[in-house]
Length: 185
Ligand SMILES: Cc1ncc(C[n+]2csc(CCOP(=O)(O)OP(=O)(O)O)c2C)c(N)n1
Image 1: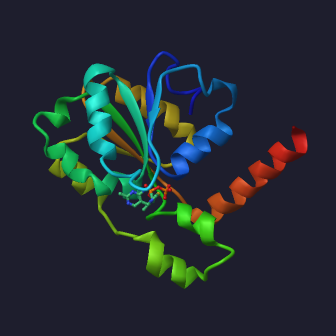
Image 2: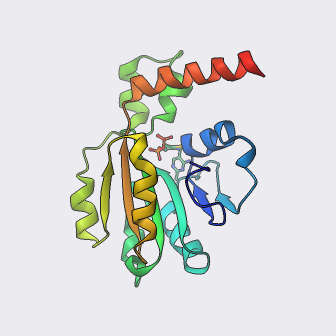
């Protein structure tokens, strides 16, 4: 992502997997631009509103957010004129607070994690975007990410670009990446 999103444009990254992955995997590009993030006990609070606020003065801003953080502050769109702000949202839809799968996989059962932490929802993102009059695209493969970014930049307004994640596959891929990093550095 840091190679695809233009280098002179800022990025905001939500809690929790997105910021962890950004710090782990974005390599030497990490500090080559303005980045915004916040973490902690209330680290998903106000994600959309803060991004809209930053985009008001630094646009176009790319917000990389998980689905739960995004939903948690979805009423941010009701702020006056929010839909005219130039915020590009990369929505990583891993069906709830997937970070807890990573944190508790070895301590809790799948059912316990699901009942206590995941907060899965079956949101129709396209309809949600339509309700707020935000242009929307569903990205089906990594190859299409750059195309989606170019499309988002051709519009002088906010857009939502959603990527749906297969969490089992992602878990394995992440393990492979960690192994590769540890073996080669
Ligand atoms: C207001 C608030 N409530 C709860 C939490 C605990 N919390 C941290 S990350 C997270 C899940 C975030 O899920 P999502 O945005 O979908 O990102 P993921 O890590 O799943 O990719 C939660 C609930 C928090 N940080 N802030």
